Amino acid sequence: MSDKQHRFRRFCAWVVGIVFTGSGALKLMDPTGAGLVMDEYFKFLHLGFLSVLSKPAGIAFALAETVTGIALVTGVWRKLTAVACSLLMALFTILTILLVAFNPEMDCGCFGEITHLTHWQSLLKNIVIDFLLVIAFVPAKNLGTPKKKKYVTFVTVTAAMVAFLVYSLAHLPLKDFTDYAPGKKLLSALDENENVMFKASFVYEKNGMRKSFTLEEELPDSSWTFIRSEAIPNKDLKDMPVLPVTENGEISDSLAAQGNVMIVSLYKPQSLDAKEKAAAHDFLAQAEAAGFRPLLLSTTPEIALGEYQSDYRALIGLNRSNGGVTLIQDGIIIKKWSRIAPPTFEEMEELYQGEALDTLMDSESNGALAFQAFMLGCFALLLLL
Image (cartoon, rainbow, N blue to C red; front, side):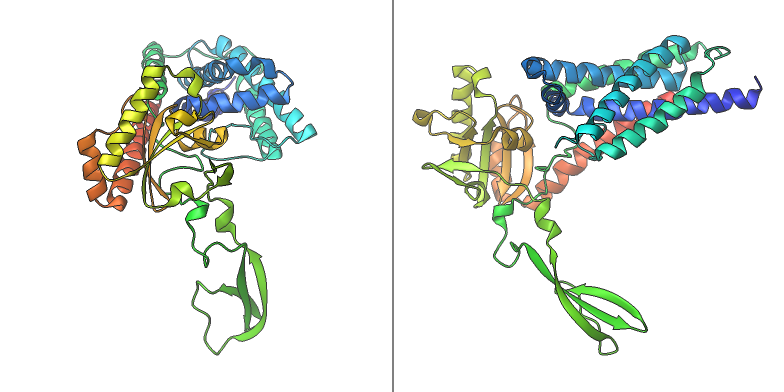
């Protein structure tokens, strides 16, 4: 085998490794979300009785994907890595074929919450990766041997990813890609002019070219000729989150969209003991004293404790931490905290008196920068050492 052929094979393995490492890291950043995806697969395969294992299984697959990706990039234990990667891709490819065949309403979860692929897109992506793996490892000989320092790189980056997972299990994702990410506005917070299913679009023509304009845009000058008006779906409404709350037997999605609201959400209240629930009520009492409107949302509310009921999917999307805290101002999600690290009374006073936009920008930029720095550091180690 020529040197060029060997390098091309290593390049193919390297590309697959980068995809595996990035995809796995995105899942490790959001282990609760990985568990939700695994739960969907269990239900799709009629294995719902395994739902209790959804989160551990999701974490295990994410970690296996990440470690395999690191091994592919560094080139360590190449035959073993080829077998492990081939088994994973065989499983992924079979699953996506089943998704295409039966077309269930679920996401493949290939890249966590950062992007959602259609079933066909997932299958095509897997076919491309399978093709690259064939080039990289068939025939399974003359695969070459890595430099000894690559084993050190493998161990270092793998340890960093495990530490990242441990951090993610205890805290919220560094970067929130859910429908309830900070900066998103609740659907119920829209005014009458914004909350319309369709928008008016006006079609004009000039020099044989036609173009559509909306009322939000500046209509063209008199050199354009008006052709017709038409109604187009308001795409902005499609991506706006809804937070349903049951109040007095009726479901409303506006209770959390009024004023400065500090929410504690319990999507699995049965897993919290009496002391932890009492701590949630004490925290909301402090939030009220700081000026916020307190709101305790639970999937199984206890009327004696003054809890409101909400949907499991909505609450686990709102805050990945069971018992986590979320600040919403005038319907805009501002900031989130995990159950183990809620804001202190002094911090809440500063939040209430401060500018919501500054708080939003700080929390979003800090998390995003931390995640980018971590990933850049890991990839720098993989590619440069």
